[in-house]
Amino acid sequence: MPVVITSVGEDAHRVDALLDLGRAERLAEGAAELKPARPDSVMWACTSGSFVFGREGANIQAAGVAQALGVPASSTSIAFVDACRALGVQRVAVAASYPEDVAQHFVRFLTAGGVDVVSMGSNGIITAAEVGTLAPEQVVAMVKAADHPDAEAVLVPDTAMHTLGIVDELESAVGKPVLTANQVTVWKGLELAGVVPSLPDLGTLFATRGNSE
Image 1 (cartoon, rainbow, N blue to C red):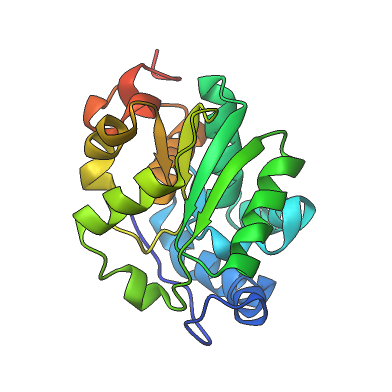
Image 2: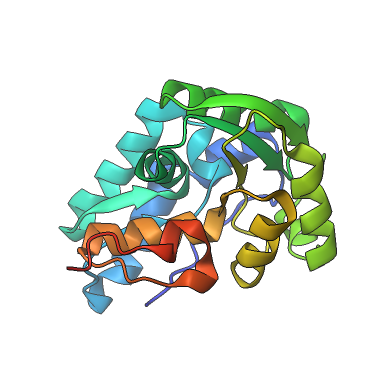
């Protein structure tokens, strides 16, 4: 799975910085760098750098990458909505690393996609670099604090957060599906490529086969 790290202006969970992070020129540069790898599908693996553009803007981002590479493309934010639909989940809690104002953009994005947010916890972390230092027990505590009895799943945005190795632990902590940024990104990329294997260690989303047959 080839990975290209797109250019970053300022590492900050602020709307202005995130709009700069996800602008078309940066994505076009990343797509050009990825083209020699000839991928079957492509994901813009950034939650906040896509949801700050709203649903329409995120679709435009994905369409631009798809056009540049000639293969299906999507983004982490879109993948969250699609993963909820795949699991039949309507009501969710959100455990966000971001400051409140940024986290509310994610809530609005989900709402526009038909997902109801019944509870949202924002943790005020300003940089992706700091998010990347969170220990597993801190992530578990964040998810438990954000959960709500009416939520059918807990969503954990931010691809900088190390969650792939603890998805089962997170689900055990709250007793329901947990969808994390890197998890849904991988799932959506595989779905676009036409093959979603059964990978139980990656939580409920991967526990049953998607398009693998």
